[in-house]
Length: 115
Length: 116
Image (tube, rainbow over all chains, first blue to last red; front, side, top):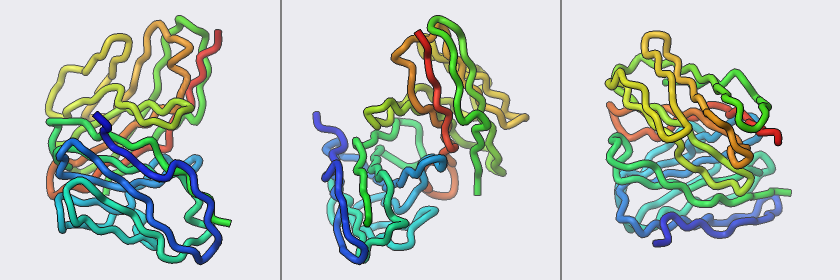
């Protein structure tokens, strides 16, 4: 049972480059989300999705795009990386965003450095 | 919007001692959930304990228990008989259950160090 799989685990980008952080879950969860973790800031919600074809912005969406074409995958795109996007990124999934039927399962995180 | 405050950036206790991590939150909602997550050096986010706001009884999970004071908007985590493996970042988190799926709101975390 893989759970939530994030790739890559580490990445270094140059300013202005683009990249996609991949997130896949095999638990048939409806709800998926992306967070960033910065020192002293906790985790902050970037974007989320309540199902295939539906996405919405979280607290810190600027500079990031998402799409949800399948239930399993929820990629996060950085179109033009900036040093301010240096962070650790977490993908999470759960059956629903507003019920306690299940906990949120987190991927192992991606450490991104933009130079 | 809700906020979560953890006022202790770092705590250090001796092994086998009991330690309490504090968390306060602010919300206008009446239905919500509260969580404590543990993040060891491996970076993995691990759910420690959760509490439904409508339940008056405090949640417990083995050595972990919470003191949930809804009127005071306080949600502290008590770790009994602390172990070296409890060394980690601990995050308090809030989830609104009404009005849409807007994810978890986290506090800034408390770095807990268990000394041998």
